[in-house]
Structures are given as structure tokens and as C-alpha cells.
Length: 292
Image 1 (tube, one colour):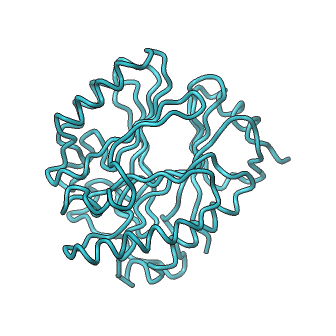
Image 2 (cartoon, helix red, strand yellow):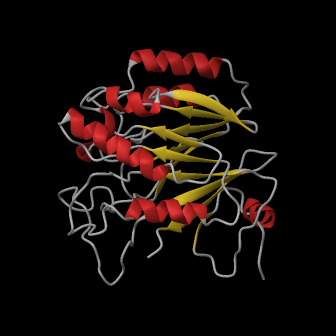
Image 3 (cartoon, rainbow, N blue to C red):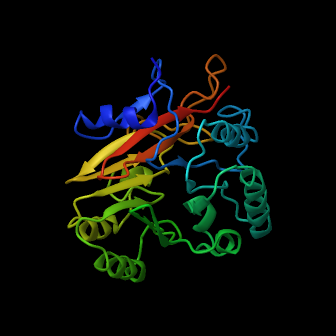
């Protein structure tokens, strides 16, 4: 029997937390009063590598089409970094950013928001990104939820930096203790696999600033796979990539892209829906695959 978004949310709440669902049989998510957004990450526009994605210029448009095909448009879409693939050529960097922006302009949603990854920003401290998309860190509020975008990539040393940490502390000081807070970063704020650059050197300082607030969730990208971790009561959820998957943390000697499987194209690639209750602090996460 079909189930709408509100009923799905109520059922998930019975389990005492967020639900991570993928391809649930018989579940049709229809419109409801509770708002939701879509997280997409790591499209790496400009990447070339047929052994890991022979459709490198097709995956992002397919994801745009998939979001546009959702039964109810999300309130907004958030891209959590590595919009483009790194290049040392500043002209090529801007060309890729412009092409990416043109592709995602096809999203039929009220708002599309962006943050950089290290591929976009580390070589010029976010200058080119800023020309196309504005500030690399900022906040916004939506239907009772406070969203914080933290830049842990413009510093090539993988730090947030004291200036931005002071900005974060000032912002949090203005929030009530029971505020519903969602943080977006590119790298994980905790040490997932520092040897693979899957960490933020001063991420613990940001986590410490967030710790007094009981309703905090962090969404990030960078590691090209789904991963869920708790630091105290704060949940951290990484997103799949739109270009190629990477192996599980420290599961092999080198961090190398997983080769393309022609029998299962787009396996390991995807995006997610995140739904927030109109009342309360629970978030429901639904993983979506890139259509073949």
C-alpha cells in the first residue's frame, strides 16, 4: 500500500531516530506539510576517466533530471562541494565552474545552494568559486531550522581557521539551546581517515562549539560514499558522489576510485532526500540512486 511522506515520517519516528532507506518496495513519498531538501555532492565536473565513469559528462544531468522528476519538488537543493574537478589552470577552473552552473540551472526547485570542495577552492582559497557562487561559508534559516555552511576546504591545510571558528561561535551564541541546527561541510569534521585526507585538522573545535546544542546534524561529502558516525549526540552523514565511488575508509592501501561496473552502471552513485518534521527535531533520510 502506498505511504505518503507524513505517514513515512511517523513510522520512522517510532524507531527513535532517523531512517536510512534505499529503494523501499511499495513506498511512494508524496507531498506533505513537512519540508524536505535534497543533498547532492561531488559531481567533479571536468573529470575524465572512462575506467571509473565513462559517462562523466552525463551523470550530473541525469541527477538533475531525477530531482526534477520527484513527485514533490524539494524546498531547496544543497551541493556539498567538489562541484568541479581540480585544475591548476585558473581559466579552465572558471570554465568548469561556468559549465557546472549552466547544467544545474536546469533544476526546477525554488532554491539551489552551493559550497566548495577542495577541488573547487584549495588552489585559490575559494576565489573562483566566490565569483560564481558567493561566500564559501554562510548561514540561512528555513521553516524553523538553522542551517550553517562551514568551509573546511579553502585552506589547503584542511583547516576551518580561527577567523571562521570565531564567526561560528558568534552565530551559535545567538541561537537558543533547543535550536534545530543542520551543518553542511565538505570534509568530515571528525578524523575518519586522516591518512586519506578524510578529516578536518581543527574540526574538533567546531564540534566542541556545536556540542552544547542537543539537536545538531551534520551532512558532508568528500568521501564519495554513504557513512554514518556519531560524535557524542551529533550525527554525521556523508553523501554518495555523482562521479565515482571510493572504497570504505582504510579498507585498502590506497584511496583509489572503484572501477566502473558495466553490468551495474552508476552503482554507488546517488543523492539523498532529507525531510524535517514541522514540529520536533528528527530528520528522515532517503538515499536515491542515479537512474540508468
